[in-house]
Length: 123
Image 1 (tube, rainbow, N blue to C red):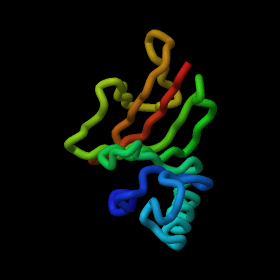
Image 2: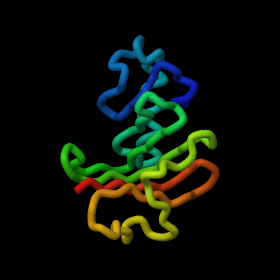
Image 3: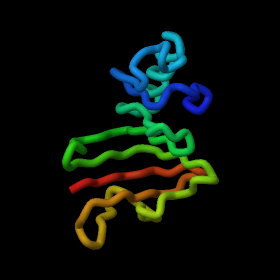
């Protein structure tokens, strides 16, 4: 959906970017459809593309993150983009992973073609 909605960059339950329906190129029904799907999928904090439709983050939970915190969810990456080199691929439980140096990290567990579970921790 997000790829088809060319002007829409990011969307959550209580905000979107651009901020208006007209600016986002969607109507009220489409907005409500996104939000209904978030609820069905347990994606409480919406999705982000950061202006790049080759990288779409579906945020299931987030705590903090202004200067420290964590986020967990699903990540879709196009084949051309591939997994970022700044992340760590984890084969197993993301909740049990900790970076070797105890510092901030992004961990990814592959699900299927282009789809990953992710856990981001910022200390």
